[in-house]
Image (cartoon, rainbow, N blue to C red; front, side, top):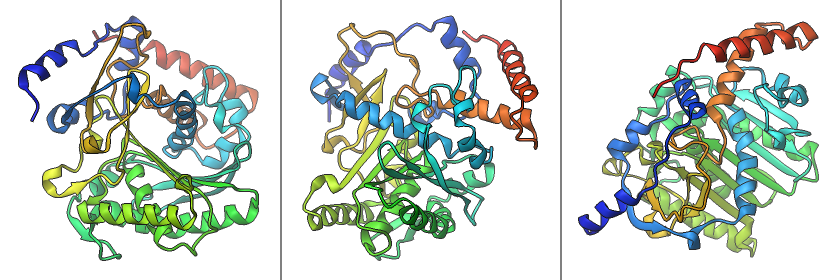
Length: 381
């Protein structure tokens, strides 16, 4: 138990930033749930203060940010084939994927919606890094949210613990499509040198369940290095299943005689309450032993002893510029404004209707729509 006086002093030192007019506009335009209120109610602060010694390398920071672009894309309501076909346009200034340069040159392998709640996912090949990437959407509809709320523990088929009942049903509805997509990807792109499994929010929890399958059944896909990258993921199962996960990870690394043959990056963020769900009191636990924490534009390693905490204080020497997303929240990971990208993709879906036609009149129509919608956003102090 930490000293309450020490904790109080540290809270006073926790860096806060004034909101610029641009930042106020950004927060005024929020349409998606950011779960800051959940963070206030359920998330616990660690007594461990993050310092410069805990900072992740810039190389890792940039790598996760690039993978995060694929993570976010799984949320779109636009046909994914249309997006991949038009990436060169959609990533231009004032278009929905402006700045999402990691997506360029990538090739869509498979696009699918699960049998349960039509949860979306896709598989893509990234030629520059020779990565096969499977990305699973987080919660996007009210029906999917109902499965988030099914927080009973269901016996996992391994008989090694309990899994979140709602996540398990959603995963079972997606599993055959994911596996077909992976097989197709490895067949069509023989130069794949790494499998990346990624998801945000509930999609992150399902990414763990997919990894559990692949680590336990090593004959399903070719024996390749696996990289798990999840952002803002809730706890997928209980302590026994978490222990089974860790045994499978250790076994996979040992069989391949390299720790780097399986890499896991579970990233939490400042003011995001989702990693605190479902609560510890219901028996749920995180799987990753040493997660990461993203706060005010910096990525930190979290010590294994603090892995269940969702909030951390970080030393600030005052030399860093003000963060782009000072309030934090569920949709602001790795300096990315997922809120802006997804809302603009929705706008584009509405603007194009069913035409999916990028002739010049529709491009101009889109730019007019952005200008009109942006001008209607009111400022909130």
